[in-house]
Length: 185
Image 1 (cartoon, rainbow, N blue to C red):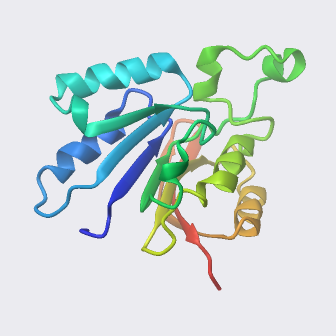
Image 2 (spheres, rainbow, N blue to C red):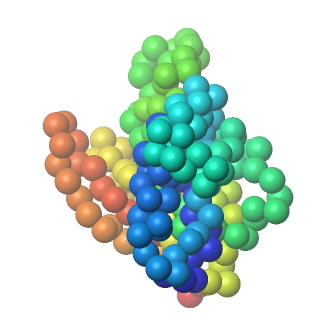
């Protein structure tokens, strides 16, 4: 665990994962990674800041306003050991497809026309922010409402190795926790 220096929570929303990670790290001796959270929505970052303050760890989480990695400082390239992303994974509604009428709230669920385009965009750039010299992982959620076969082919084509960590049936779908790392061979 001491080799984990930086953890990133993309799409942090309320900040719950970033806050949880910081609180856990405080309980483990010799484990003090820098925790980052990012989100496309400014209101989400305001919420995350407020929640961090309520948990008395406001100065211990670095928050970044960014659409995926577009606004990340160059100094963060090749630096994260773990990246966590609970991406919007549902296919776009017909209203968004036909009218291109995307509202702010739609960023929280709309993964693109097939449901995985945003994840593929994320993965195309995430590898530049992983510390490939050390053990590294990306954890993400996928849904059975997406064509998982096509998604997995795209993931492999990007150079990742995918492992299913857990699968859970909830309401109308299976939610799948996946773990990726760069496939070197």
